[in-house]
Length: 171
Image 1: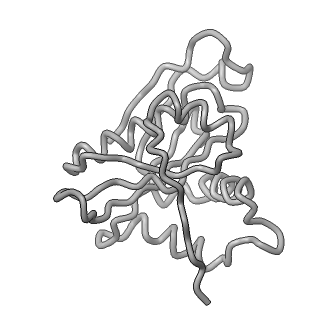
Image 2 (image 1 turned 60 degrees about the vertical axis):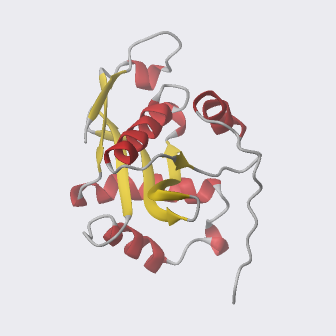
């Protein structure tokens, strides 16, 4: 799965405007050194840094899952001119309301300089393509209500179902 999207157009930031193409592709083991800062940026955005930082073992296991054939967890990266600009992690799971597996887009992150440039949209489209290929009729995700920047994109590409996420953290 590889998608190339043109990044030339109006309103681009200087750091992104010089790039000719954006490639969305599966992550490879060689991407770790560029993927890790994206992963850490994503987690920091959601308050998982400093004392609340994820246990490094979680990062290690998450990374390993991307390359394990038995895992339903997948990772895509957005790359331009050899630089990773964003990531998308998704997984397939069963549902009680449909026969085919559904696709959950768990993590989506782009570097701040790439926001508003079509990188997030291209990652979402690539996850949707992967879901279609896998026979999944749906891609869904969650975001925090205060994530105004991302919500502008999400409101343009997805339907707000009105569901509220509830959780119980277990000891």
